[in-house]
Image (cartoon, rainbow over all chains, first blue to last red; front, top):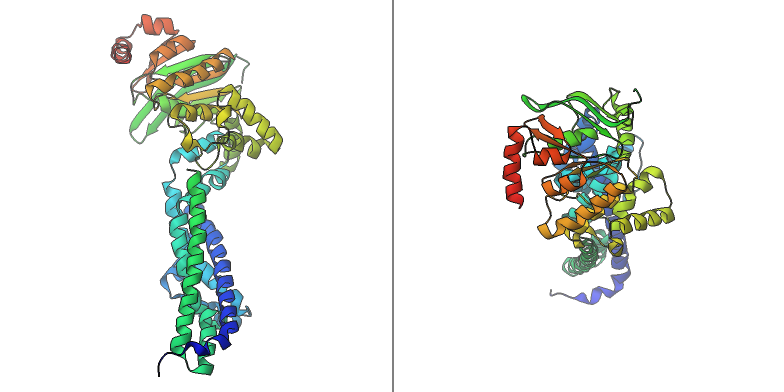
Length: 218
Length: 256
C-alpha cells in the first residue's frame, strides 16, 4: 500500500481549522510567556525573601517536571478543586507558564548584564528603583534576549502539539481525527508536518523583523 | 540648619569598605554659584566623595547637607528612598562613561525623567528637549540613538539630560576622561557655559588646565584626605604641600 494523497482534500477544512487553533494557542501562550517571563525575572531578582522562596518552588515545578504532566495537572487536576478550565485556556496557561519560566531565566541573566551605570544614571535623575527597572534596565535586558526568546517561541510552537492530549483540536489532533476515519497516518502526519513547517517559517519571519527593528536602535 | 550661605556642606565625611578607609574625615563647603574642582591621584577618594553627595555611595560617617537639607539623614527605609529621590532631582550628575540610555533617542534620554517625575506633557517635553539640546549644541541630533553619536556628543547629551531636571547643583565625575583628546574641548565649552550661568558645580577632573581656568577653588586629595585646598592660582602655582607638588609635577608634565 503506497502513499495516496488523494484522501487529503476531503479533510482540508479540518486540517486548516487545526492550523488556526495551533496558531491561536501559540500566540496566546507566547504573549503569556513573554509578559510572565519579565514578571518572574523581576520577582526572582528583586522580590523580598518571603516571596522569592515559594516562587522558587513554583519555578522548580515548571522546570523539573514534564510539560505533559503540567497540562494534566492544570486541566484534569484543577477540576478536583473546583477550577474547571476550558481545554484551550488550560493549554495556554500550561504552555505559557512553562515557557515563562524559561524566558525568565534568560531575562534574569540579561538584567544582571545591563551595565550598572544605567541604574546609577537613572537613580541620579531621581527615578525610584522600580521606575529605573521599568524604564531603563528591563527594556534593555528584554531587547538583548529577543533572539534567544525567539528560539523558545519556536520550541513553544512545537510543544503546542501536546495540548492535543487535553482535547484541544489543534493541528496534531486534527490530523489524528482524519487518520481515525481514513486509516492514512503517513499522509496526514506528513501534511501536519508541512503545516508546522510553514507556521514555523512565518514565525521566523516575524522574529527577524522584530530583531531588525531592534538592531536599528543600537 | 542655620542660615549660613553654604550651599553644599560636607561635615566629617568618612567612608570605609570593610577595613579599607577611602574617605578619612573630610569636610567641604561650597557656596551657591561656586565651582570646585577635586583633583588627585586615582584611588584618592575623589569620586567616592562626589558620589556621596547624591548618596550613590553612601557615607559610613559624617553628614552631607544641600541647601539647608541633610541628604543622608536617618529615616526608615521607605521614607529615606523617597527623600533621596527628591534630593537627587536637584542634583545633576555626569559620568565618565556617559551612561546614556541606549534604547532611547537623544530626545527621550533628555525628557524621560522630567516626564516621569514632573508629569509634564509631551509638548512641554519636546520644548524642554529642544531648549536643552540647543544649549549644548546638539539640536540636530535630537532623534538619533546614542550609538550614533560621537563621544563628545554623548557627553553633551548626558549634560543636557541632567540639566533637563533643572538641578541646583551639578556633579561631574571625570566627564572628559573617556573622550578622545580632540573631543574634550566641546565638552569643556559646555561646562564653561554653565560656569558663566553661575551653576554650582563640583568637578572631579584630571585636566589641570581646565580646572585652573574655570574653578573658584581646587581641592587636592590623596589617600582619603584633603591634602591642600585653595584658589587655583595658589594650588597650581604655589602649592604648600610636597605631595601636591609631586602630583602636579607628574600631571602637568604628562598633560603638556
